[in-house]
Amino acid sequence: MNNIEKACKEKKLKLTSQRKIIAKVLSNSNDHPNVEELYARANKIDSKIGIATVYRTLNLFEQLGLIKRLEIGERKARYEEFQRSNEHFHLVDIESGNIVEFQSRELEDLKHKIAHQLGFKLVSSRLELYGTLLKKNKY
Amino acid sequence: MNNIEKACKEKKLKLTSQRKIIAKVLSNSNDHPNVEELYARANKIDSKIGIATVYRTLNLFEQLGLIKRLEIGERKARYEEFQRSNEHFHLVDIESGNIVEFQSRELEDLKHKIAHQLGFKLVSSRLELYGTLLKKNKY
DNA sequence: CTATGTGCAAAGGGTTTGCAGGGGA
DNA sequence: TCCCCTGCAAACCCTTTGCACATAG
Image (cartoon, rainbow over all chains, first blue to last red; front, side, top):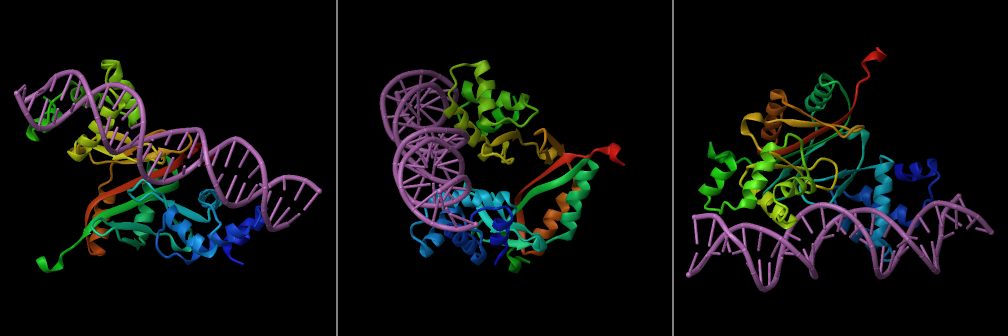
């Protein structure tokens, strides 16, 4: 049983076939799918799942802290599974739309330090970098 | 003549009364108003300005690099005048909704350093911290 | 005078919700 | 069985757009 199924059981939420499917789709996604994409992937497994259920389930999972909603530029939300052990940030290639994940202890520490200096306890944050590929041969 | 009026002249854009009013409202705003708020403030000066004009003008000013669109949590865009000399970040108090601005050369440098290490030239970035006030008397 | 800009209302796109029926526990 | 959950379609909210009129240059 995976994390998401465990969490449903703990919170006494019903483990419906839709929730299992959406959980599975999220686990199998290594990219950062938006709702439409998640809906399409879920529908490959069960074509009767409605998009309203996808939205409701994503909101539920997000509130349970199981997934993370990204707001990368566009108006549409994107999602990724939340892994406490794998805190990372995103860099978006503005030419190709590719998303590069990276980790940085230095950045993590600095965020907390700054919040503390301002008299706050850091609860969450949002950081994305947008850039273009360096043309190395220009040197 | 302010920055915005100068920019319109340079780009051969018409300096309509609506654009002047919206430019003035932006200059006079020290908070981070959303479109609805900007629309209300502009309407106090000229009640005939339509919200479509506000949207179109904000998009125009943003493209000219005169203002900056913030996407702080909510679905609605917020705006602030862009001042190259005053690059700053935002920390949102999640209990009150207050926004604290701060500067950090360290953070600025780190963003560029990370992008460069990943093989990218940093073009822009989005960073917000969300936190709660530290209760100092707890110590 | 003419092309650009405006106001209005309708359309768009993503997300949420009311309701009646369905299915886990 | 009982209540939570789902599917559908309509509603919502923010933003954009088509069109006819207005106006800056």
